Amino acid sequence: MSAPEKPAPPVNYWTKPYWNAANEGKLIIQRCLDCQKHIFYPRICCPFCFSDRIEWVPASGKGRVYTYTVVRSNAPSAFIGDMPFVIAIVRLEEGVQMLTNIVGCDPDEVRCEMPVEVTFERLNENFVLPKFKPAGSE
Amino acid sequence: MESIKDKVAIVGTGCTKFGENWDLSLEDMIIDAVYEAYEDAGIGPEDVQAVWFGSYWSGIPAPSQPLATALKLDYKPVTRLENMCATASDALRQAAYAVAAGVCDIALVIGAEKLKDSGYSGLPTDDIAMGNVSTAINTFRSRNFTAPGHFAMMATSYFNKYGLSPEAGKEMLAKIMVKNHHNGTMSPKAHFQKEITVEQVLKAPIIAWPLGLLDCCGVSDGAAAAILVRGDMARNFRPDPVYIKACQIAVGPQEGYMNPRHDWTMVKETYRAGIAAYAEAGIKDPRREISMAEVHDCFSITEAVIYEDLQFTRRGGAREEIEAGTFELHGELPVNMDGGLKCFGHPIGATGLRMVYELCKQIQGKAGPRQIKNPGLGLAHNLGGTPGGATVSVIIVGP
Ligand SMILES: [Zn+2]
Picture 1 (spheres, chains in turn orange, brown):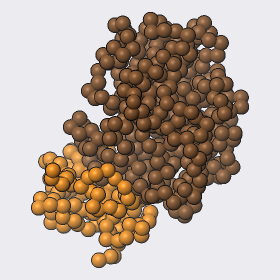
Picture 2: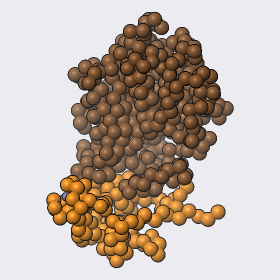
Picture 3: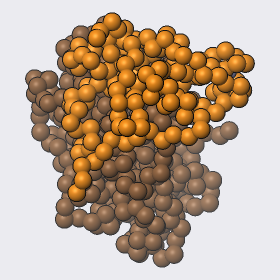
Picture 4: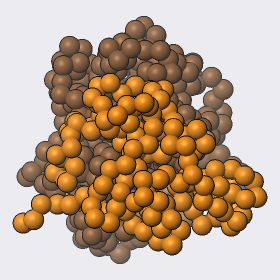
């Protein structure tokens, strides 16, 4: 029996620009051309005004941890080897939030309101995943 | 829009022992719970006119026919339904509506789940537990994010919002679990019947920080049942029927994952289902008018937040109420008299009816050593989903 692999994100035409940018180490999010609001996750139309006039814009990659957990127990899966790992909701400067991992520090150092910035981790030959690390860390 | 208040009564209830019921099949447990309810109501299978059967994923695909076979239902209508952990509560709601509408006078409601020999522990996420059954696409719930993880995020944000150190926050939560375990020792049908200490809760292995093993309920095998009849017929069955005062469900649009301003220190669905149920039952001051509650303590933090969402206390008030013993068995507003999900157990699709079973036993003065004094209105709160997007049922019953 082969070891389980981490799932790859499903890609469709409206998420493709996001994953292409991540592959180049860039975090991009959407913005509505009609109501000017930022949008995440990728959509085919604006969830605020239903406009389909949406553009992709660079995100600063800076935000704060709103809430988090440190996963220390799980059922068998490809993620077992990563334990303990941090799952967090990060709220970006642009006003959108991402469900993500905090990496690059001891999980016990993570706190609510902690400033974080985007970092990129390669999942496999096709995908790079945006994650977050403490702001200003290496 | 009319209220359901007093139009429908519960005249019989049944519940199996919850736990690791290796020697009982799903059908065995259903028969045990249903025949206890028949006996309690003084009726037999020939009296039942329609059946609602709730189960989350036992034996999927599971049509209604095996149930009709096991219960010898003689070509009667059976509806099988699923609404996550609020499944049994929704089955009761559907049956109550049918009785209130006058399309049947005597309805049987069943909730049943057989989990322990499926390997389901509550930890596996969709891809493991559901296998190829699940076709759900959900951009925001990744596969390394467990149920304890979802609720743990409510605890970290709660501690942060109210300025609690991790130690103080964990101790507040531990006291809830100690209370539920204490109550569970007086529940002969409970899965876990052992006292625990605050120290044991604090020292238990962490599952998803800040929640440790003893902050989490397990999953169980079990079944529960109820017989509903028209309110004006209820006293023909027994002198002490229990009347339904409200049954409401609120389903949220997963705001926690969509709305960057969503507050994870509350479950808006609980708040909204509570408001709707209080309005339906004519309740103005829940803290004073509700005399007891069975609530969905899937995790310690869930119960803490429920106190606030159901307006038993103010926002941020959970800690002082816990210190004051408000929700203990002989406190001002007892919560989870039978041990709750934490100790009575959580066979997912049966849980809502187990709560109603306990409320009926309390109202009828049959709760044994855990009997509370002067039970009046009882509330059953049953939550499916996660803090970021839930399905919450609030049922209120009373004498
Ligand atoms: Zn817009």
